Length: 126
Image (cartoon, rainbow, N blue to C red; front, side, top):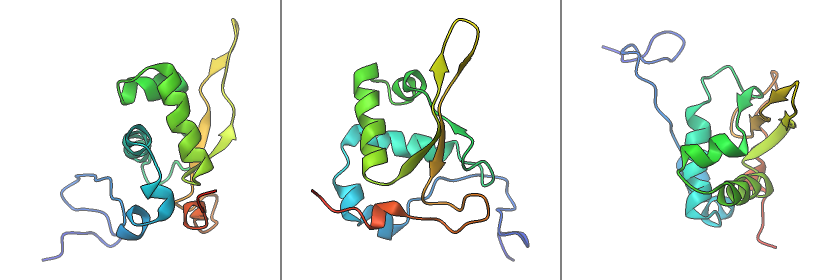
């Protein structure tokens, strides 16, 4: 009996965050700090299979997710960007009349019908 339906989704309804071995063995992943690795797992937790580019993450949210200070969260987000795991789609802002968190794209997953860019695979320590 297969554990997946015709779309490849689990029949039991459970969702998982998976990190492929090639990603974890990449120099980009190995160079990440512990905080950046934890934040990346939390970031992927928010990906539901169809919301790439609409994944919302502010500095405050990131700090809350990994239980750290805002400055530490800023550094972790920066590491994920520089190492090619996430790309900024739209910058968030906080004003009196309008506030919204930044929207991010995962390079591990397809976006707008395009294949995943997997920018982290081209990253080299520099």
